[in-house]
Image (cartoon, helix red, strand yellow):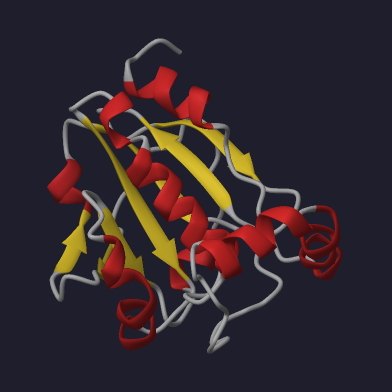
Length: 180
């Protein structure tokens, strides 16, 4: 199965780093973004979580983020609990939702990010401390961001071209304010 713009999302349920089971019922009636990340220790992904938290106050109060990682819950907690995110961070250890949403994989995308985004990678690892100490998950997963309206309908899908390519924050902000 593959989701497309205009489809209604149903049935997403995964464990969160807070130890609770997340379900889409928790965001019913709200706009949100599902952000598919790579493995838990991915420096690019942890930096993205940090950036979303840093700019959280710019988003509408009725908007939230659901960050999904290709990781076991235990490994994800080890790498993400320190963020104290105001949104859900979930573990999809079996990549069930990565398959349902047809999240792409690319060796070239992983290499492209390591070469062309080297300053960002070095910043994430050596300034922010997001070292890839335990790579447990698929290294070739490309990130994807999906904007969903208050009725659970997909309004935008952004498939990253490399391991660090996400939907620009300004587009997320505009969607959160219902300006797109």
